[in-house]
Image (spheres, rainbow, N blue to C red):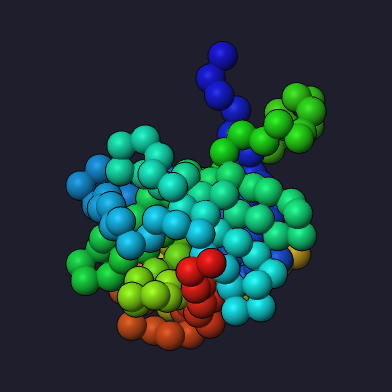
Amino acid sequence: MKTKRFLFILIILPFITGCIVPSIYPLYTDKDIEFDQKLLGTWTDEDEKSTWRFERGSEDFYELTYTEDEMVSMFDVCLVRLEDETFLDFYPQESAELNEFYSLHLIPAHSFARVLIKGSRIEIEFLSLEWLQEAIEDRKIRIDSMEFGDERIVLTAPTKELQRMILSIQDNEDAFSDPLKLFPK
């Protein structure tokens, strides 16, 4: 049976950066993937409430161990280059803490963020859920998505459409969260 992946990303990341935007498809194709050694290591936020440990994963992927309040989550992460910008694509790994019946009800999803690697600091800016919802409602952005609940959307557009959207908004600071600044631990 294929390895099950879990939508932990909808549970964990909203608490660290506000709401995130999950996507059924990744932001990358094979030709967009890069690997930067500078991302490797253990990083912490300014308040030292969370740690982010990036290790080399398979091929040019990273394995991220995210820890907050003694809760650990694992992600496969890909560094994506689109034109002159770099992004991280997060995808949750299987969790042993969930029972099989419960895990069968979860759907795997990607999320992505713009990333700047500045010497001894990393800045991560997630796509803003509020901005995207408003842009879709006002028809400033046309992208395949589904609404669920009162305040959530899931992007259902294929990778090429996601890339076109990201490139069209990359200079709009409102389209991304305030930077989450990480420092070496």
